[in-house]
Every structure is written in C-alpha cells, then in structure tokens.
Image (cartoon, rainbow, N blue to C red; front, top):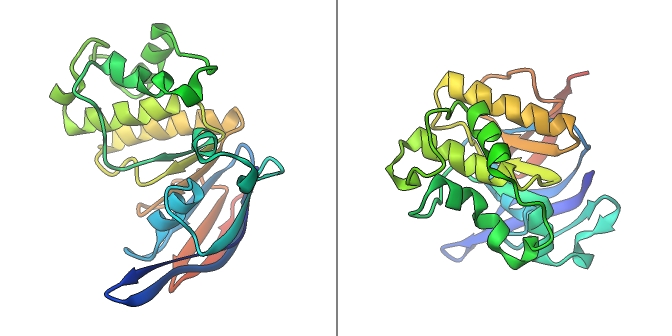
Length: 222
C-alpha cells in the first residue's frame, strides 16, 4: 500500500511560480486500480512523476508498506514504484535485449530475470504473437513499440504501477489486451494509478480528479 500525505508540487515559469497540486492526500491499496482524471495540463503527469521520485516536490510524505520514502534510496524506490511512460524509449536492439535491459542494472542484480517463456507469454497477451524476440525493436510499428515498452516495465513486477496514458497510441483491441494484463497484475497485489482521458471502463476502484491544483475523489466502485 502506498499512502500519500500532503503532496504539493510547483514549478517556475517565466519567474512565476505555478502550483500544480496542493496538499493532496490519498492512498493506493494493494490489488486496486485507480483512475486519475482532469483537464489537459492540470498536473496529472506531474503527480505520477513526483510519486516515482523523478521530479522534486515542495512537500509531502510517501509511505510504502509502512516505510517512509526518506528511508529508501531513490533507485530502490523506482524499482518498486514504476512509471510507465506514454512515449517509448526502446534501444536500437532486439526485442529480447530491450526486455532484458532493466535487469542489467545493479539495482536489480538480485531480481528474478524472466526467461524467454515468460517474455513470450506477456508479448502474446499483448497481441504481439507475430513479433519474434530477435526482431529489431526500432523496425516495429509505433503501436508495437509502445506495447514492448509496456512489457519491459511489466516484467519487472513493481509493487506500484503508475501509468501515463499507456494506451494512447493503441487501437481498442490492443488497449483491451493491455488492460487485461494490468488487471492480472492487480489481482496479484499490485497497486495501479493510471491517467485516463477515455470513458470509464469500469476497472477503476476509485477515481481522482485534479483541477486548479486541487485533487479530489469523485466516486467509488465496489
């Protein structure tokens, strides 16, 4: 479970301080999917980046499984609280090498490295049955690359998944397949916070709405 207390973030634009979110409090329970909505430019991506400790915050306390983020190294935190970006960042190499890239870092030296069967299962679930592990990732379509980038993070099995419109470049069938995988991760205990601009698909346990720096809960699905 990730608990967020009194999160505030701002940035300076042309010598003017812009408050993005002010005094936000919320909890992401294990095994639940949460939707984050709001107008374009309202600060949704900023919240996700702050939670992943990729940008500084003005104030706020993060508690993961009872442990304060101050007690956890940033590299370790990002291993457990993973931001899935809308844009892809694949290297010019095979699909296999891209999927294995996170496990080459020292921070994951004791992590389980997925075998090719596990990789194949995730790729097939994302409707990438015709993509061979030896294919060069840069020669695939944009939608295929987006799903491979998603699979790369998914295979690291983070405790908290922060999803920044990861289905933006996907057709409806591919997007449904991706959300089925997210459902699977949640059933195994992952907490999920996803930015949504599309219609409610019923997967969200709760919905948060941000506008004018204020974050509020809209409703709850039992």
